[in-house]
Amino acid sequence: MNKKLFLYCDNQMNADERKKFEEELKTDPALQAQYNNYLGNIKKLRKYNSVELNEKYFVNAVPVMHGRIESRKHFSLLSPKFGLALSSMTAVLLVFLMFFGKTTDNTIKLEKSLKGLSTEEISNVLDTYSNNESQLDKTIQVAEIVGDSGVISAVGDKLASEIIPNNEQLTAMESSESYEYLTGSINEKEADIVYNEIIKKEFFKGK
Amino acid sequence: MPNNEEDVQYINRFLEGDEAAFNKLAEKYRQKIYWHARRMTGSHIDADEIVQEVLLVLYRKLKDFKFKSSLYTWIYKITSTRCLNYLSRQKVRRFLSLDEPEILNIKDNYDVLKNIEDKDKLAKLDQILKILPAKQRQIFILRNFEEMSYEEIAAVTGKSVGGMKANYFHALNKVMEKMNE
Image (cartoon, rainbow over all chains, first blue to last red; front, top):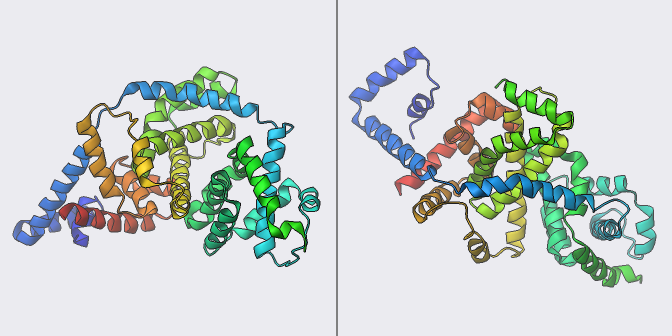
Protein backbone atom coordinates (compact mmCIF):
# COMPACT_ATOMS: atom_id res chain seq x y z
CA MET A 1 0.00 0.00 0.00
CA ASN A 2 1.21 3.42 -0.98
CA LYS A 3 2.42 5.33 2.10
CA LYS A 4 0.64 8.51 1.07
CA LEU A 5 -2.57 6.60 0.48
CA PHE A 6 -2.21 5.12 3.95
CA LEU A 7 -1.74 8.54 5.53
CA TYR A 8 -4.79 9.79 3.67
CA CYS A 9 -7.02 6.85 4.63
CA ASP A 10 -5.76 6.90 8.21
CA ASN A 11 -6.55 10.60 8.67
CA GLN A 12 -2.94 11.52 9.23
CA MET A 13 -2.83 14.34 6.67
CA ASN A 14 -3.55 18.00 7.37
CA ALA A 15 -6.05 19.93 5.25
CA ASP A 16 -3.50 21.06 2.69
CA GLU A 17 -1.98 17.63 2.29
CA ARG A 18 -5.42 16.08 1.89
CA LYS A 19 -6.35 18.58 -0.81
CA LYS A 20 -3.14 17.96 -2.70
CA PHE A 21 -3.54 14.20 -2.42
CA GLU A 22 -7.14 14.31 -3.62
CA GLU A 23 -5.99 16.16 -6.74
CA GLU A 24 -3.40 13.47 -7.32
CA LEU A 25 -6.03 10.78 -6.80
CA LYS A 26 -8.19 12.25 -9.52
CA THR A 27 -5.41 12.16 -12.10
CA ASP A 28 -3.66 8.91 -11.22
CA PRO A 29 -5.68 5.82 -12.23
CA ALA A 30 -3.25 3.42 -10.52
CA LEU A 31 -3.58 5.29 -7.25
CA GLN A 32 -7.34 5.41 -7.68
CA ALA A 33 -7.42 1.64 -8.20
CA GLN A 34 -5.41 1.17 -5.02
CA TYR A 35 -7.77 3.44 -3.13
CA ASN A 36 -10.84 1.57 -4.38
CA ASN A 37 -9.21 -1.71 -3.50
CA TYR A 38 -8.57 -0.41 0.03
CA LEU A 39 -12.17 0.73 0.43
CA GLY A 40 -13.48 -2.60 -0.85
CA ASN A 41 -11.31 -4.59 1.55
CA ILE A 42 -12.23 -2.44 4.53
CA LYS A 43 -15.91 -2.90 3.64
CA LYS A 44 -15.38 -6.67 3.56
CA LEU A 45 -13.62 -6.59 6.93
CA ARG A 46 -16.52 -4.66 8.45
CA LYS A 47 -18.93 -7.22 7.00
CA TYR A 48 -16.96 -10.13 8.46
CA ASN A 49 -16.97 -8.35 11.78
CA SER A 50 -20.72 -7.69 11.92
CA VAL A 51 -22.05 -10.80 13.59
CA GLU A 52 -24.98 -11.46 15.88
CA LEU A 53 -24.45 -12.84 19.31
CA ASN A 54 -26.34 -15.11 21.58
CA GLU A 55 -27.03 -12.77 24.49
CA LYS A 56 -27.43 -15.65 26.94
CA TYR A 57 -23.69 -16.13 27.02
CA PHE A 58 -23.07 -12.63 28.30
CA VAL A 59 -25.80 -12.89 30.93
CA ASN A 60 -23.90 -15.79 32.48
CA ALA A 61 -20.45 -14.18 32.44
CA VAL A 62 -20.74 -12.31 35.75
CA PRO A 63 -22.33 -15.17 37.79
CA VAL A 64 -19.60 -17.50 36.48
CA MET A 65 -16.94 -15.05 37.66
CA HIS A 66 -18.53 -14.87 41.14
CA GLY A 67 -18.56 -18.67 41.20
CA ARG A 68 -14.84 -18.70 40.50
CA ILE A 69 -14.16 -16.21 43.26
CA GLU A 70 -16.02 -18.43 45.70
CA SER A 71 -14.15 -21.54 44.62
CA ARG A 72 -10.79 -19.75 44.91
CA LYS A 73 -11.58 -18.69 48.46
CA HIS A 74 -11.26 -22.35 49.40
CA PHE A 75 -7.71 -22.29 48.11
CA SER A 76 -6.40 -20.70 51.26
CA LEU A 77 -2.80 -20.42 52.37
CA LEU A 78 -3.38 -22.94 55.12
CA SER A 79 -4.97 -25.64 52.98
CA PRO A 80 -3.19 -28.89 52.08
CA LYS A 81 -3.90 -28.05 48.46
CA PHE A 82 -1.77 -24.95 48.77
CA GLY A 83 0.97 -26.99 50.38
CA LEU A 84 0.99 -29.41 47.49
CA ALA A 85 0.96 -26.63 44.94
CA LEU A 86 3.80 -24.86 46.72
CA SER A 87 5.80 -28.08 46.88
CA SER A 88 5.36 -28.78 43.20
CA MET A 89 6.22 -25.23 42.25
CA THR A 90 9.32 -25.34 44.42
CA ALA A 91 10.29 -28.61 42.79
CA VAL A 92 9.98 -27.05 39.34
CA LEU A 93 12.18 -24.20 40.46
CA LEU A 94 14.71 -26.63 41.78
CA VAL A 95 14.85 -28.22 38.35
CA PHE A 96 15.68 -24.76 37.02
CA LEU A 97 18.40 -24.40 39.60
CA MET A 98 19.82 -27.84 39.03
CA PHE A 99 20.13 -27.41 35.31
CA PHE A 100 20.73 -23.75 34.78
CA GLY A 101 21.85 -22.28 38.04
CA LYS A 102 25.45 -21.46 38.75
CA THR A 103 25.60 -24.24 41.28
CA THR A 104 26.18 -27.67 39.77
CA ASP A 105 25.74 -29.56 42.99
CA ASN A 106 23.60 -32.48 41.90
CA THR A 107 23.53 -33.97 45.33
CA ILE A 108 21.09 -31.40 46.59
CA LYS A 109 18.28 -33.00 48.53
CA LEU A 110 14.72 -32.07 47.72
CA GLU A 111 13.47 -32.05 51.27
CA LYS A 112 16.25 -29.81 52.47
CA SER A 113 15.73 -27.39 49.61
CA LEU A 114 12.01 -27.21 50.13
CA LYS A 115 12.57 -25.99 53.64
CA GLY A 116 15.13 -23.44 52.51
CA LEU A 117 13.08 -21.49 49.97
CA SER A 118 10.71 -18.71 50.92
CA THR A 119 7.89 -17.53 48.69
CA GLU A 120 9.84 -14.41 47.84
CA GLU A 121 12.92 -16.43 46.92
CA ILE A 122 10.85 -18.65 44.66
CA SER A 123 9.53 -15.60 42.92
CA ASN A 124 13.03 -14.16 42.55
CA VAL A 125 14.37 -17.40 41.10
CA LEU A 126 11.62 -17.44 38.51
CA ASP A 127 12.39 -13.86 37.57
CA THR A 128 16.10 -14.60 37.31
CA TYR A 129 15.62 -17.59 35.06
CA SER A 130 13.06 -16.05 32.78
CA ASN A 131 14.68 -12.72 32.07
CA ASN A 132 15.32 -13.13 28.38
CA GLU A 133 13.93 -14.82 25.33
CA SER A 134 16.69 -17.40 25.14
CA GLN A 135 15.32 -18.92 28.31
CA LEU A 136 12.37 -20.29 26.35
CA ASP A 137 14.27 -23.40 25.34
CA LYS A 138 15.29 -24.00 28.91
CA THR A 139 11.74 -23.64 30.12
CA ILE A 140 10.53 -26.07 27.52
CA GLN A 141 13.15 -28.56 28.66
CA VAL A 142 12.03 -28.16 32.23
CA ALA A 143 8.41 -28.45 31.24
CA GLU A 144 9.16 -31.65 29.36
CA ILE A 145 10.98 -33.09 32.34
CA VAL A 146 8.07 -32.27 34.57
CA GLY A 147 5.61 -33.46 31.95
CA ASP A 148 2.61 -31.72 33.41
CA SER A 149 0.30 -29.40 31.52
CA GLY A 150 -0.56 -27.27 34.55
CA VAL A 151 3.07 -26.57 35.29
CA ILE A 152 3.93 -26.01 31.64
CA SER A 153 1.09 -23.56 31.40
CA ALA A 154 2.12 -21.76 34.58
CA VAL A 155 5.81 -21.57 33.75
CA GLY A 156 5.03 -20.63 30.15
CA ASP A 157 2.74 -17.91 31.40
CA LYS A 158 5.43 -16.44 33.57
CA LEU A 159 7.94 -16.68 30.77
CA ALA A 160 5.53 -15.12 28.33
CA SER A 161 5.83 -11.84 30.11
CA GLU A 162 9.50 -11.86 29.15
CA ILE A 163 9.09 -13.12 25.59
CA ILE A 164 6.84 -10.21 24.78
CA PRO A 165 8.96 -7.11 25.30
CA ASN A 166 5.82 -5.04 25.72
CA ASN A 167 4.65 -6.92 28.74
CA GLU A 168 6.14 -4.64 31.35
CA GLN A 169 2.64 -3.54 32.18
CA LEU A 170 1.71 -7.12 32.98
CA THR A 171 4.53 -7.37 35.47
CA ALA A 172 3.69 -4.01 36.98
CA MET A 173 -0.01 -4.59 37.07
CA GLU A 174 -0.09 -8.16 38.17
CA SER A 175 3.15 -8.72 40.01
CA SER A 176 1.25 -9.60 43.12
CA GLU A 177 -0.87 -12.04 41.16
CA SER A 178 1.82 -13.97 39.32
CA TYR A 179 2.66 -16.10 42.29
CA GLU A 180 -0.98 -16.73 43.00
CA TYR A 181 -1.58 -17.68 39.38
CA LEU A 182 1.35 -20.04 39.35
CA THR A 183 0.06 -21.96 42.32
CA GLY A 184 -3.61 -21.52 41.53
CA SER A 185 -3.29 -23.03 38.07
CA ILE A 186 -2.28 -26.42 39.42
CA ASN A 187 -5.00 -28.55 40.90
CA GLU A 188 -4.44 -30.96 43.75
CA LYS A 189 -4.20 -34.02 41.54
CA GLU A 190 -1.79 -32.35 39.12
CA ALA A 191 0.36 -31.12 41.98
CA ASP A 192 0.53 -34.62 43.37
CA ILE A 193 1.55 -36.10 40.02
CA VAL A 194 4.20 -33.45 39.44
CA TYR A 195 5.60 -33.82 42.91
CA ASN A 196 5.85 -37.59 42.56
CA GLU A 197 7.35 -37.38 39.10
CA ILE A 198 10.02 -34.96 40.19
CA ILE A 199 11.16 -36.82 43.26
CA LYS A 200 11.63 -39.91 41.10
CA LYS A 201 14.24 -38.12 39.00
CA GLU A 202 17.80 -39.25 39.32
CA PHE A 203 19.28 -35.99 40.45
CA PHE A 204 17.07 -35.84 43.51
CA LYS A 205 18.17 -39.23 44.70
CA GLY A 206 21.69 -38.05 45.33
CA LYS A 207 24.76 -39.64 43.87
CA MET B 1 -10.33 9.45 27.05
CA PRO B 2 -11.76 11.04 30.25
CA ASN B 3 -13.48 8.89 32.81
CA ASN B 4 -17.14 8.38 32.27
CA GLU B 5 -19.15 9.85 35.17
CA GLU B 6 -21.25 6.72 35.39
CA ASP B 7 -18.11 4.54 35.66
CA VAL B 8 -16.74 6.69 38.47
CA GLN B 9 -19.99 6.32 40.38
CA TYR B 10 -20.03 2.55 39.91
CA ILE B 11 -16.42 2.26 41.05
CA ASN B 12 -17.03 4.35 44.16
CA ARG B 13 -20.18 2.41 45.02
CA PHE B 14 -18.35 -0.88 44.55
CA LEU B 15 -15.49 0.27 46.78
CA GLU B 16 -18.09 1.11 49.43
CA GLY B 17 -19.25 -2.49 49.29
CA ASP B 18 -22.02 -2.42 46.70
CA GLU B 19 -21.52 -5.62 44.68
CA ALA B 20 -24.34 -4.68 42.31
CA ALA B 21 -22.25 -1.72 41.13
CA PHE B 22 -19.50 -4.08 40.02
CA ASN B 23 -22.04 -6.19 38.18
CA LYS B 24 -23.17 -3.09 36.31
CA LEU B 25 -19.59 -2.34 35.26
CA ALA B 26 -19.07 -5.94 34.21
CA GLU B 27 -22.28 -5.89 32.18
CA LYS B 28 -21.19 -2.70 30.50
CA TYR B 29 -17.74 -3.93 29.47
CA ARG B 30 -18.02 -7.71 29.13
CA GLN B 31 -18.90 -7.61 25.43
CA LYS B 32 -15.98 -5.32 24.64
CA ILE B 33 -13.64 -7.61 26.57
CA TYR B 34 -15.06 -10.66 24.84
CA TRP B 35 -14.76 -9.25 21.34
CA HIS B 36 -11.25 -8.02 21.80
CA ALA B 37 -10.20 -11.41 23.14
CA ARG B 38 -12.13 -13.25 20.44
CA ARG B 39 -10.48 -11.31 17.64
CA MET B 40 -7.08 -11.73 19.23
CA THR B 41 -7.35 -15.47 19.86
CA GLY B 42 -9.80 -16.47 17.11
CA SER B 43 -11.53 -18.80 19.53
CA HIS B 44 -14.64 -18.62 21.67
CA ILE B 45 -13.30 -20.95 24.35
CA ASP B 46 -10.15 -18.89 24.78
CA ALA B 47 -12.03 -15.59 24.68
CA ASP B 48 -14.41 -16.92 27.32
CA GLU B 49 -11.48 -17.78 29.57
CA ILE B 50 -9.95 -14.35 29.07
CA VAL B 51 -13.28 -12.65 29.88
CA GLN B 52 -13.34 -14.52 33.18
CA GLU B 53 -9.73 -13.66 33.96
CA VAL B 54 -10.21 -9.99 33.16
CA LEU B 55 -13.38 -9.73 35.25
CA LEU B 56 -11.55 -11.36 38.14
CA VAL B 57 -8.65 -8.92 37.84
CA LEU B 58 -11.11 -6.02 37.75
CA TYR B 59 -12.91 -7.32 40.80
CA ARG B 60 -9.69 -7.62 42.76
CA LYS B 61 -7.80 -4.62 41.48
CA LEU B 62 -10.50 -2.00 41.18
CA LYS B 63 -9.52 -0.78 44.64
CA ASP B 64 -6.09 0.10 43.19
CA PHE B 65 -7.50 2.01 40.22
CA LYS B 66 -6.16 5.56 40.56
CA PHE B 67 -8.29 7.27 37.89
CA LYS B 68 -5.09 8.29 36.10
CA SER B 69 -6.47 6.81 32.91
CA SER B 70 -10.05 6.06 31.94
CA LEU B 71 -11.55 2.81 33.13
CA TYR B 72 -12.12 1.99 29.47
CA THR B 73 -8.37 2.26 28.74
CA TRP B 74 -7.49 0.33 31.87
CA ILE B 75 -9.82 -2.51 30.96
CA TYR B 76 -8.37 -2.70 27.45
CA LYS B 77 -4.89 -2.67 28.93
CA ILE B 78 -5.69 -5.65 31.12
CA THR B 79 -7.50 -7.46 28.30
CA SER B 80 -4.75 -6.82 25.76
CA THR B 81 -2.05 -7.96 28.13
CA ARG B 82 -3.98 -11.11 28.95
CA CYS B 83 -4.47 -11.85 25.27
CA LEU B 84 -0.78 -11.40 24.42
CA ASN B 85 0.16 -13.47 27.40
CA TYR B 86 -2.31 -16.14 26.39
CA LEU B 87 -0.99 -16.25 22.81
CA SER B 88 2.58 -16.74 24.00
CA ARG B 89 1.53 -19.48 26.37
CA GLN B 90 -0.39 -21.11 23.55
CA LYS B 91 2.76 -21.03 21.39
CA VAL B 92 4.63 -22.95 24.06
CA ARG B 93 1.78 -25.42 24.48
CA ARG B 94 1.51 -26.02 20.74
CA PHE B 95 5.26 -26.47 20.52
CA LEU B 96 4.95 -29.15 23.14
CA SER B 97 1.93 -30.58 21.27
CA LEU B 98 -0.29 -30.21 24.31
CA ASP B 99 -3.01 -28.54 22.28
CA GLU B 100 -3.88 -30.23 19.02
CA PRO B 101 -5.53 -27.81 16.58
CA GLU B 102 -8.23 -30.38 15.76
CA ILE B 103 -9.21 -30.65 19.39
CA LEU B 104 -9.37 -26.90 19.71
CA ASN B 105 -11.69 -26.72 16.71
CA ILE B 106 -14.05 -29.28 18.20
CA LYS B 107 -14.11 -27.35 21.46
CA ASP B 108 -15.09 -24.22 19.60
CA ASN B 109 -18.31 -25.73 18.31
CA TYR B 110 -19.92 -24.47 21.51
CA ASP B 111 -20.22 -20.93 20.34
CA VAL B 112 -22.11 -17.78 21.11
CA LEU B 113 -22.80 -16.91 17.49
CA LYS B 114 -26.37 -17.19 16.42
CA ASN B 115 -26.12 -18.65 12.95
CA ILE B 116 -23.85 -20.45 10.52
CA GLU B 117 -23.47 -17.44 8.26
CA ASP B 118 -22.00 -15.48 11.14
CA LYS B 119 -19.64 -18.33 11.94
CA ASP B 120 -18.41 -18.27 8.36
CA LYS B 121 -17.89 -14.54 8.46
CA LEU B 122 -15.97 -14.74 11.69
CA ALA B 123 -13.90 -17.64 10.38
CA LYS B 124 -12.85 -15.47 7.43
CA LEU B 125 -11.96 -12.64 9.77
CA ASP B 126 -9.94 -15.02 11.96
CA GLN B 127 -8.03 -16.28 8.93
CA ILE B 128 -7.06 -12.76 8.00
CA LEU B 129 -6.12 -11.66 11.51
CA LYS B 130 -4.09 -14.80 12.11
CA ILE B 131 -1.47 -13.74 9.56
CA LEU B 132 -0.49 -10.86 11.82
CA PRO B 133 2.01 -11.27 14.65
CA ALA B 134 0.28 -10.87 18.02
CA LYS B 135 1.34 -7.29 18.67
CA GLN B 136 0.45 -6.09 15.19
CA ARG B 137 -2.87 -7.90 15.49
CA GLN B 138 -3.51 -6.09 18.75
CA ILE B 139 -2.88 -2.69 17.16
CA PHE B 140 -4.86 -3.54 14.05
CA ILE B 141 -7.86 -4.61 16.13
CA LEU B 142 -7.74 -1.60 18.43
CA ARG B 143 -7.42 0.80 15.50
CA ASN B 144 -9.74 -0.86 13.02
CA PHE B 145 -12.49 -2.44 15.09
CA GLU B 146 -12.40 -0.56 18.39
CA GLU B 147 -11.73 2.64 16.41
CA MET B 148 -9.29 3.94 19.02
CA SER B 149 -7.06 6.93 18.40
CA TYR B 150 -3.30 6.32 18.35
CA GLU B 151 -3.05 8.11 21.70
CA GLU B 152 -5.53 5.65 23.22
CA ILE B 153 -3.73 2.69 21.66
CA ALA B 154 -0.44 4.00 23.01
CA ALA B 155 -2.02 4.26 26.47
CA VAL B 156 -3.23 0.65 26.24
CA THR B 157 0.02 -0.78 24.93
CA GLY B 158 2.43 1.51 26.77
CA LYS B 159 4.29 2.24 23.52
CA SER B 160 4.88 5.44 21.56
CA VAL B 161 2.34 6.89 19.15
CA GLY B 162 4.95 6.83 16.36
CA GLY B 163 5.57 3.16 16.91
CA MET B 164 1.84 2.46 16.82
CA LYS B 165 1.46 4.26 13.50
CA ALA B 166 4.33 2.33 11.94
CA ASN B 167 2.99 -0.95 13.25
CA TYR B 168 -0.50 -0.24 11.99
CA PHE B 169 0.86 0.59 8.55
CA HIS B 170 2.69 -2.76 8.38
CA ALA B 171 -0.35 -4.61 9.68
CA LEU B 172 -2.69 -2.95 7.20
CA ASN B 173 -0.35 -3.80 4.32
CA LYS B 174 -0.32 -7.46 5.31
CA VAL B 175 -4.09 -7.56 5.66
CA MET B 176 -4.58 -5.95 2.25
CA GLU B 177 -2.17 -8.41 0.64
CA LYS B 178 -3.97 -11.33 2.23
CA MET B 179 -7.36 -10.07 1.14
CA ASN B 180 -6.17 -9.55 -2.42
CA GLU B 181 -4.91 -13.13 -2.78
